[in-house]
Length: 630
Ligand SMILES: Nc1ncnc2c1ncn2[C@@H]1O[C@H](COP(=O)(O)OP(=O)(O)O)[C@@H](O)[C@H]1O
Ligand SMILES: [Mg+2]
Image (tube, rainbow, N blue to C red):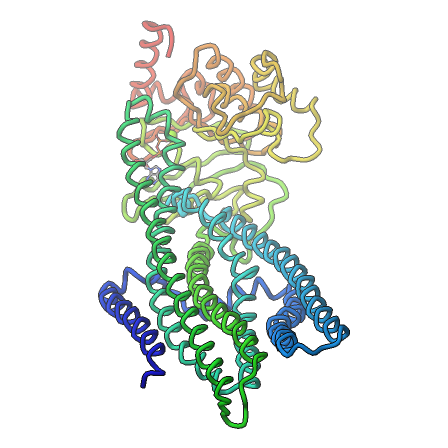
């Protein structure tokens, strides 16, 4: 009995830890929902969809698998050589050439394995990056195809996280996890085979520890999943908060909400910090635990190996020799490591599956506003526009436009008038199918816009929206917006036409003046003028203009008025202008109230009508007389 004391002690320690873990595991189980990644898609579905991206690169993956054979061979053969070498030294009688052969073969195997590892990682990294590049591009393209309505529903921060972080997680799947899974499985099988060939009894001793490694690992998986999820959620949370609040920073400052926002941020920051600490804690417990198992197994190996050698034990015809003990000592390490890695990799695989699912959820949003199969290409647009009994709502059953019908003849200028919220912007955004209408028809040159390819529809329309969006870049890049073959003369002519030249010429950089993010180094009026130039350069057949109202100084307003009047002569124009004097010459003025057309006609007809327009006009006229301004 005495001789088994050391084993009993080791067993007792491992058993005690196993018990603690099992108890912790059992108590965790109650909160199962909180542990998993709450995924809706099956692993198999995700794998299938991911593999679709990997498929074009199968030769690369095959090459990596072939190269991998060398690394696996190194893991299995080197302990044998080492064992042999130590055996030889122990016996004390060997020739120098025996020594050289072993050292050189060891070095050769090591070098070959290192070279193969190098090429494996190079090929994998390249392939992984290409795959992720494709996914990112597809995702961005997909997001571009979503309707305004669908985009409104997803926070920008979420989209940013999807395109950056989550695609990175997928890259790790290909460059790291999948390949390591395969490699580790082969190493486990190979090492096990080599151990069995050397000595059954010692293999059994090592195998006794495997259930514990597996048990610890499974338990660890549960804990680390939860920790990982918390980190992930915390990160997304902070990203959303940041993207929103950095954009709104000026409002925060204006309303003196810095302290409040700081507290909110602190809370989220603390939560993320805590989640990260939790993750560290889980890993911090797991790793030493497995190390303890490893040390225990090594001690057992030496105990049995040494006694077996001393007392000449034989098991199924195999005696224990020094080379066997040395080889086993190395194999134990090579055996436990992959098991532990497998567990961590399965775990990371779960995490990347969660990321993949999130990406696929975006991919699965079917674009609402799409080309119909029989949609046609419009080569030219004359500019006849008709709304026939159009009903539209952003939210179910809250009608924003109610039975709106009007006609615009090619070349005409039509203006929309009405109080804020009456639906002016909405009408303008429907013409280019930024949103789809629920009832009625919109016709361009007599063709229903649903039957026209969206790209060709938008090509012929110049939309100048209420809040002009400028991209970071230069004035030139914002005016041409990626259009080829435009020279500076044309740009300058366009700027001059819309009166943007006067302020651009005053800038030190001229057309090359830097535009900061969202164009915040320009005034609202200047941004609007740039957007006019942008539209003119793109030579649309129909112009749609939603005039900005806020923050426009009188000087710029005069420039805007003037360029508006010029632009009215180019082609068909639909506009919302806030100065009624601007629209006096419009061919038709449509007066809206609560989503319905209440009057239409030209300026003089509407004045004679003495209706809503008349009241608006007299009000504004008097105000101008009194205030001399806006
Ligand atoms: N993206 C949106 N989602 C939901 N409701 C919206 C959206 N945009 C506008 N609305 C609502 O539609 C109505 C008309 O808005 P809009 O066409 O912008 O008015 P106007 O340009 O005449 O001031 C308003 O009541 C507004 O609240
Ligand atoms: Mg509006």
